[in-house]
Amino acid sequence: MDYRTKLGLYVGSPDTKVGHAFVEAWKNDPEFEIWSTQLDGPRATLSYVKKFYKAKFCICNQGSGMNSACVAESINSGCVPVIMPEYYDFPLIDIINWRKFSIIVKEEDVYNLKEILKAISDEKYRELQKNTVKVQRLFEWNSSPMEYDAFHMVMYELWLRRHAMP
Image (cartoon, rainbow, N blue to C red; front, side):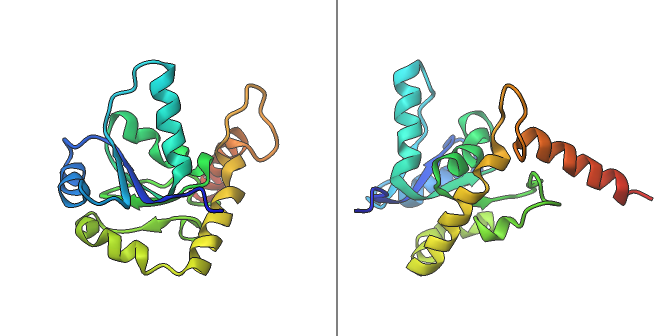
């Protein structure tokens, strides 16, 4: 049984250019869930997190507020991130290949997003989702750093960049 009942989840403000376009294009589509409510208390936070577990793809565009955590929440929940960057500096870009576990589309593709996501085969989706789960621990912050967690990945990336400088 597949518990991911939504094609996509959009979390973010409708006040951004992409947010407004997404809400206008997909607000009446039952395959998309749109969450643009401010978090207020533990119940709202729980409702917010549960939505990530119900979607196959989580649409993350550059923005502020709740949307700033969208990529991390997507990865944490095993929801394949769909990243719509204008200018997005991918974390750990020197260590991981983002195209193996996420979909990267242009912001202007917001109106074609359903077609883009539906064109992904079940096999390709399963591969992306499996790889999303594989990279989860690289994004975890622990109170005491653990092998291959976010602390170690950031330190390693800094080390790589230091050695790449002339």
